[in-house]
Amino acid sequence: MAADACLVCESRLGDAIEPPCELGGVTSDIKPWPRFGEIVVCARCGHIQKDLNEGWREQTDRIYDDYELNLISGGAEKVIFGQNAALTRSERVLSAVQEVTSLPTRGRMLDIGCGNGATLRAFGRGLSGWRLSGFEVNARTRHEVLSLPGVEAFIAGELEAVEGEFDCITLIHVLEHLPDPRTVLRWVRAHLAPGGLLVVQIPDIAANPLDLAVFDHSSHFDPPRLSAFMTALGFDTIEIGGHVAKEVTGVFRDSNRATTAVDRTEDAAEVEARVRADIGWLASTLEAALDRANEAPLGVFGTAVAGTWLAGRLGDRVSFFVDQDPQRIGKTHLGLPVLDPTDVPAGSSVFIAFTPRLAQEIQLSLIHI
Image 1 (tube, rainbow, N blue to C red):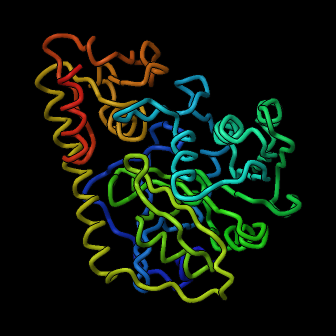
Image 2 (cartoon, rainbow, N blue to C red):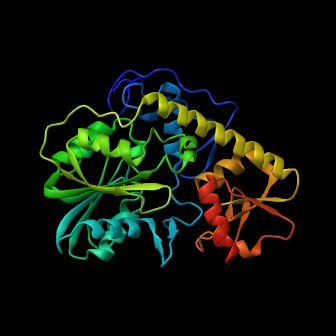
């Protein structure tokens, strides 16, 4: 696919949106990055993506060459806090799938982009009769993945090396990385067993504009555009929703229909106006944090994308991080201590770099600690 083509509808792209100031970025393995990727909105279908020019590809290759998944938690998967329990992201994905469809006691499952096996681990615990396989572009985690209960195969390199059909294929935080998602999803459709499921989880750009700052994310979806894309590629949507805050989880099945053109979910001009507003919000968030840093010792809430992006821009103006994840509390991130909310030093300020609604929810949860 050409560098200047839409990743969803393959139309020719226009000009990138210029941010009002140097925003900097963050990598998907949670490290500050000096560049903010060039954001383009497709004039035909409204898809939001990076301009996948030569510079973007070179920098993304550098990110992946030095990729360290869940470094701060020692490789452990992110914990999601809910009303009833704290579960890993993959446990929540499996729960979402089981809520909308009845999984058989036995089957064959493939996790594309399996990393160190977090999704395979959750499925192995919940579906002990299933045979599991993991795929990655390199073999760094082969031994770790093969040691997991239920895993029968680890394949590295090209998807074409994976053999057979699968009753469930998962793409957990993979689709947003792909420079050619259409080709991968066609491969998935061809390798689903009759009645098999495709499970996708991605960041929700509508709920979390900070996803724009993740340099190596090539695409930025929301639920309507993800559903339209999957429909055009021949999938039926069983469920699509926000089972995890700021993320979209979709469960799909082969429709047995021919592929079609991607439908417009809304006017591309409206999408572009919203993206410009989101980029403006990032700039104003950074300005507000700089002002706050001049008033009192400053901490940043969260050690994931939002907190890391902001701390990367503020530099030595940040004194500490605050996190609710027990796997991260007591560790260091970017050379700074990660504190429990109850241990914030008196007289300090803690900046929450989320949208107003999410920030208010976090504030309310902290008040009741």
